[in-house]
Each structure stands twice: as structure tokens, then as C-alpha cells.
Length: 188
Image (tube, rainbow, N blue to C red; front, side):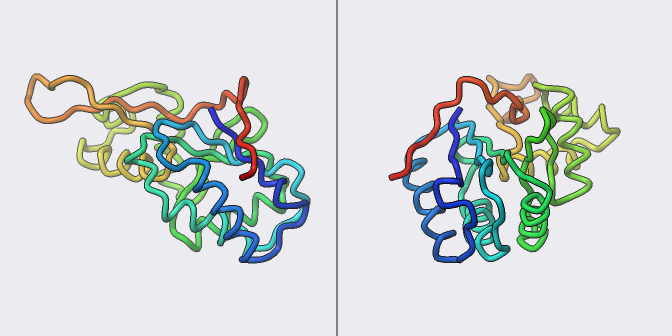
């Protein structure tokens, strides 16, 4: 697990320039790495502007191809105002992010996907058909939701050896709420 502390950018990050700088640091530190469980920690950030959140987190979530790297992303350390700023950002960008708060994980940004994510957390490790059965969905609908959750780093997928019916089969695992033994990323 890896943590990026937003506090290193200051207690009151407020500009797009600072958001770009933070996103650049984060991109540099993650370059070439796969299967990272990334926590973006907002602890110590007393207030931040919508423009900073959009430039830092919004663009990171929508430009980084998490699904290909099999990484997971969650944010933590949000007070009520900062939580609202993140919520507005992901809604405007039409994306989602997992928030870790009080030992609970929740997906913000889309109600339907949030319910799917909650079920994925309950199931822990599962296949698409397990989720489809649990939520009373078609296999195709479950696969579409899983694809979207994997793309934003809420789930990790791993191909399992051949399916008896042919084709590819995957096992999914939800982002973990565990934050112990975290190795913080230092600023560049």
C-alpha cells in the first residue's frame, strides 16, 4: 500500500497551478508501477478550492488508466467541507472515487455504482456471475458495472486460468479499508 499526502502541498491548497504540481508529483511517483493500492490522504488539509480539487484529483482520476495497472485508489482524511469538494468534483467529471472514512468504504459519484460497490465489498473476492446473482442482474449488466468500477480503481481484477466455457474469466476484489503498514510516498 502507498499513501500520497496532499498536506505536503499546504494546509489551504487553492490554485490550479498547485493542483497540477501535486498531480505531477503523484504521476512521477507512480510511473511504471503496477498493482498499487494508493491512498490519497487529505489529513491536515483544512480547506481547498474546487479548482484545486478538479486539477489535482479530478484530472488524475480521469486521465490515469488505473484498470490497466490493476491498481486501486481511495481517498481518506476528508473533513465535511473537503468531502463536499471531492463529491462536486467527481460529479462534474462524471467519475467516481472510493472514500475511506471512519473505517467504512463508500463510493461517491454514482448511486447505482455505489450500491454495486457496497455489494463488492461485502463479497470481498468474487466473479462477475457471483455479483450478478447477488444483485439480481444480468451477467452483461454486472460486467458493465464491474468494468466501470475497475476503471476508477474501486476494484482490482485478475484473470483466472481458462473458463470451462471458453473465453476469459476474471476474479474481482474490492479496494481494502486496511491502512496499516502504509509506506508514504515522499515528495519529489
